[in-house]
Amino acid sequence: MLSSGRVVMALALLGARSSGAFVHTLDVPHNSDAPHTISTGDDAAYTLTLVDDEMGKCLDGTSPAYYIRPGAEGEKFYVHHEGGGWCYNEADCVSRSQGDLGSSQYYAASTTNPQGDDGTSPSGYLSADPSSNPLMHNWTSVYLKYCDGASFSGRKEDTSATGLYYRGGYALDALLADLDANQGLSTATDVVVSGCSAGGLATFLHVDEYAERYTSANVVGMPDSGFFLDWDDEPDVNYEAEMTWVFTAQEAAGGVDKDCVAAHTATNDTWMCMFAEHTAEHIQSPIFPLQSKYDSWQTGNVLSPWATEDATNAFGAELTTRLINTVLDKPQNGAFLDACHHHCGNFNVMVTDGETQATAFAKWYNGNAGNHFYNQDQAYPCDDCCSANPAA
Image (cartoon, rainbow, N blue to C red; front, side):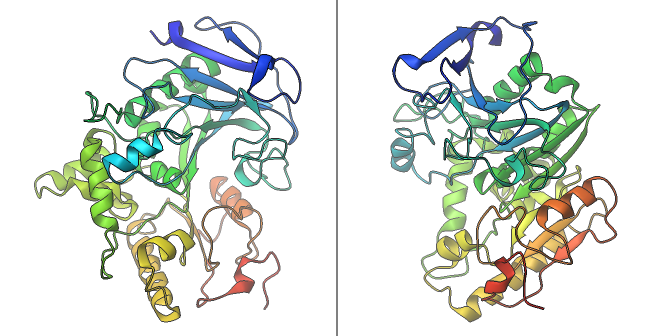
């Protein structure tokens, strides 16, 4: 039972860190009636919950975890999947298991900013400042820690040859079950599913799972920088093969979009469902991707070392075409496609058609957007495209 293994960690002293005697571990009973303290403002703390589950594990076998900051509109949830790339072979995963992207052993008990800079205010979609985050600043904010190396998708029941746990899909199940039982997610009215980078990919892969689980809520996806192309067009670029290894080794067929898997089973290429561009056409839930057409991670890791100006522009044109054909062919979807050379972030910085990502998403979510496709249609390089005040 999840209730027997659930551990909520909180700091005894304001501003204390995770080490030393300042950390207290509290056993919280299943379905506890203890009231939540509602804090607002950017200095409100996120507290850590570790979920001890028989199947859901980090790579090293430690418990999956989430941070949570209750909001004044507690029935509305922003759920963020942490990013951090993938591990592409067994040795890579062993190395990953020794740090925070593969183990929960050293997670801080509390933080003001789960994005990594404790003591600072979280930015963008995690911000509690309405000027930065107009729609979700006072929602309950959940930050799912990423410790499986496969965008919360692995469902390998036995351990790997080196004793690793490829169980990110089971970990996601366990985290959501705990959020349902103890944080009110099961009775949410609104759920925005999001994440950045590998967490953005997780949003594409799992948003329909959320919609099927929370049938009484308005569930949408807002993946940030998660539209990774199935790109294998350059010499010595093995990204497709690397992601195929992730999918196969972690036995992710049962942990990604089921309609995509069904569509690719007969052709024996279900590995394609590890890519957002192949998954997107099967997603039934409304989604609003935030994406750079010249995504700096993809140009640096997938296109490089052939990322010339011409090649980058060609890549951007191809990404735009594929996003239009797979995401925007459904009328309920929208997108903010910028031309800034970046990866993740800039939620309330870049401006296209008079809107930032934050205001464009809010208008789309509330049904007030006359334009669902915000396209910063500029050639690379475009430094002004990264500015809040782009040149005319």
